[in-house]
Amino acid sequence: MKPLTEQELHNLAMNLVGKRLEEDGYEFLAVNSELRKNPQFVCIKEKKMSFVVVKAIEYPGDPQDLDFFRADLYKMRDHALKFEARTFYAPVGLVNAKDYNLPVYLNEEYIVDYDGLIEIE
Image 1 (cartoon, helix red, strand yellow):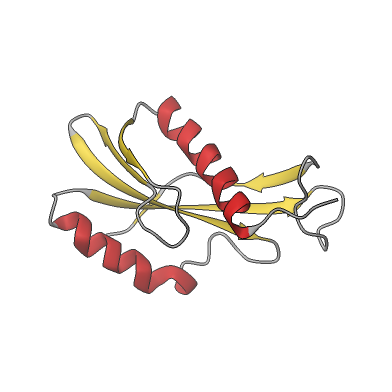
Image 2: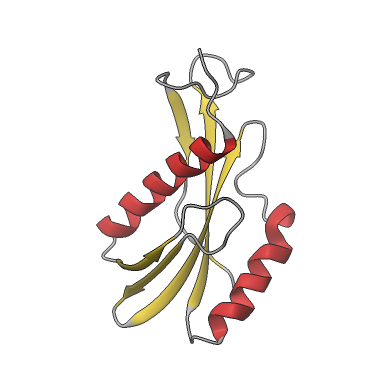
């Protein structure tokens, strides 16, 4: 069994968020899957641009804890304001479905903790 790399976890989170954005009616203007290169999605909905920062957070990390990424998020928000865009944080919690103490493995079941976009104002 091979644990997912940081990049693979990031890509998994991006796929989950991207599908939800599509379902919610967003159109993608740009997609960036490079780690630590924000935003991951620049999209538009109802003629309003949005920047979306996606973070994959493995258990025991808490996807709702904004403090760890606060500086990055506010920096992105300030950048988005120059484009009259909204900024959203999309934290995706990931955990091994069989044992929370094990990493998420390739081709193994996992549990997703994603409550949707959090606007950074």
